[in-house]
Image 1 (cartoon, rainbow, N blue to C red):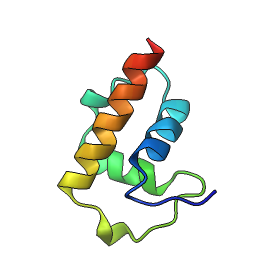
Image 2: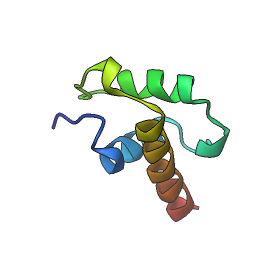
Image 3: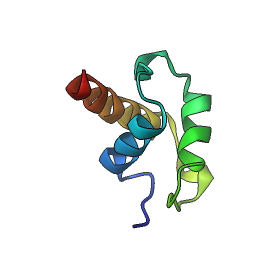
Length: 69
């Protein structure tokens, strides 16, 4: 299934799988952007990301991270 920047929950699940145990609040937005772009099945324009989108991804990832703990 392909997904893009607006699919924050899908991105969060994939980030949690790829980086288990990593607190999302410790991740810089530059790293987060690169990691999202490297996710399998992520298909969206890199230039469409911005601080608001990255913050939404980070918060969705944090929610999944806390749910797992």
